[in-house]
View 1 (cartoon, rainbow, N blue to C red):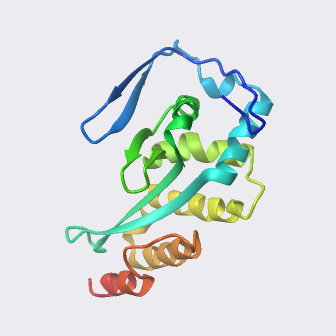
View 2 (cartoon, helix red, strand yellow):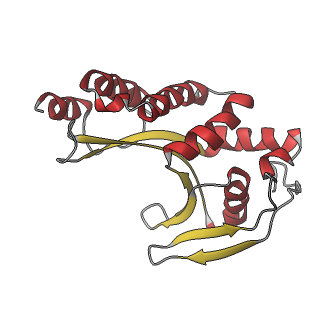
Length: 195
């Protein structure tokens, strides 16, 4: 891994097979020894570098998709992502290896590679514990705490309750206020009320 001063920071990596699917997502199959976890084998400098990198380049976000088949009419989708240009693809691959989950895909819209984790289980078992143990230092920490709370609500199926879903929407729209949203908060609340 290369740190912000341009020095190479060694991370012990397991062998990987890299493939690209038709959608342009990069998938890496890890070959790990039983009982080994990369998160347990890197130095304090390296784990703090990952936190600092995410503090500057990462995004904790929650999106909402209209789903007529759902009782609330909405699907809640939290994600953690970091985008970089092609020159830094190797760094994203190292993050993928470190967390042991998620996928790397190419975004034609942004012309960037994005490492992204969407699975609630992976977010709660791998990503969130890292940032609880090695906390962010900027205002992004507030977004992370909200994100973590939202993931807990989803894991407990509380997002299926209209009142809790309204709280989730309120909190999610307070995060990343400069980000783009497909729907306004008011439109989402109207969908819930119409059910």
